[in-house]
Image (cartoon, rainbow, N blue to C red; front, top):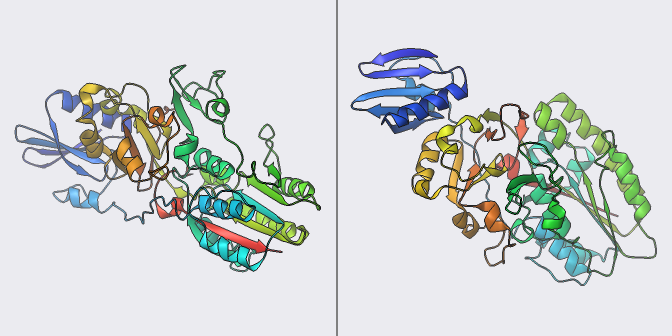
Length: 441
């Protein structure tokens, strides 16, 4: 720790680790100090005319203008809020209408025009994990297959994360209806947070014997349509599955004498971006190979086929906040935080219910907005407000939801958790804007 006297009764303390910083904040609060200012991710603590500016963010110069120096680190991010009249659910509603099914949401105007032009026998909905607008634009050339056939832009399902968005795409229903709100959630029957896809305890990585699919069942959006419906995605037990293998399976599954609807999913470029960042050379190379494979695939498709390619969410480069080390917040909670690191939910002890949002905002207001869960639902973060929520939604959302609005993410699991270079589940444009690529044959 480095201490610098700025002026009489005012000191700047810089901490090498976030744990030291959070521990000192808690110590000052226990001694009767109050948070009198929040600057970037730093706090000013004051008692009886004496103040300390505590920080784990390195900045220079350290002088009487220290607050201005810290504020200069603030960045402006374009924010995009969920819009359930302008997302994949509307696209799916138009597809369902085309095959004489009930439209669950407003129809997609672009799809309606396409279907007026031709009555397609085969419709394929494909998701490429993490391939947001910014990823497409910055990592592929203008003459690539994907960019050449880019037709319009949708907002992502919220939370802009795989478990929520892919489930909504498969089912044709919002997270509010499916209950799939994030990567992991609290299951009250066993009092544990489980990863919904795998059933393992999120905090311990131990099997729980509890299945997210059993607790939150859903049917593919094409189940009740008079079509040959199929789903094609990687074998997650194998690590070296290839995109082209999935594309070949898709082609093979198209029945010539039937009307076909398919859902096709691939895990990249999401996996690479988490590890290396959004614009690393390996991400660019991966996307180029995928683009070439898609060009091959498109030309192999039979006539009367409509191929719709989009993404479950985008990606943005991030920095880590060691949220697990913040005892000031942790002591206020009935149970550990849950859901997703950039859309995180809290169950708060009764005695802290009023003070919790203020303290959270003081500590993390630059990086996250905090809302009562009921207000987040009213603002239609997770689905249309007239929809009847899944019975587990209230348990999962608990009392408060924090939504990331800058380039930070909470590591709330522990010091041994993966540190991502790029992430999603927030409301920045990079996470929330997804392309819609359309190929007609």
